[in-house]
Length: 257
Image 1: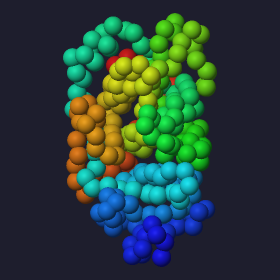
Image 2: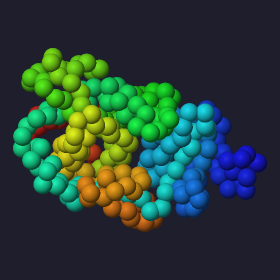
Image 3: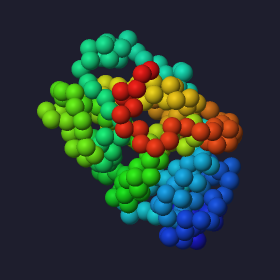
Image 4: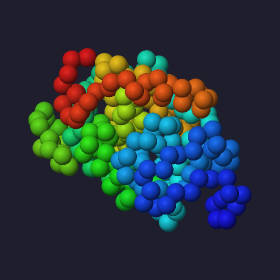
């Protein structure tokens, strides 16, 4: 048995396998919390199957692909977003401009930069490439926050003239569920501004759930809450088959609320 799985309790997948069904998330380990499977491809087919079943990939460079489904699961119900008084002031000042799906590659590259005090990143080159493929299929989406930029169009991977990308987030959309993956901020409140605008659009489009994966004080302050995995899986069964916003989300910031 592998050192990663001395008791043989994990599902092992061949590196190029994108079709073998995952085991039930109820079989995931309690320690480490939620570890379910090892290996498999990072193809769109595999990733979308994982998300629909409440499973996500998370590993670091040098490890095989690891698949997780922790219990409890942290989620944000869009109608329960908490916007603090200071964040409301930031939004009223109009310091930032927000866009959707205009610079996905730049957002994921910024999210992949190692955090202060951390030696590496879980967003390996293979993971970044996998999410870029999902973006090309209009399954993964980004929200960008710009500073000091005049109104104007932006092409993928570039910035508006005179603008700086200072925050953003990205995730995967299936049905009426948005699976948040990562966010970054180079200015105070920039990633929170991205989340507020995302939630506004998701509510307008009828989305019912945002998956935040793992609990943190930061997410709690924004209104996220842990729920039992069993309830989370039931919500996915209900809302993933429902129609969501199809195609590119580019220009969504210009839609009426």
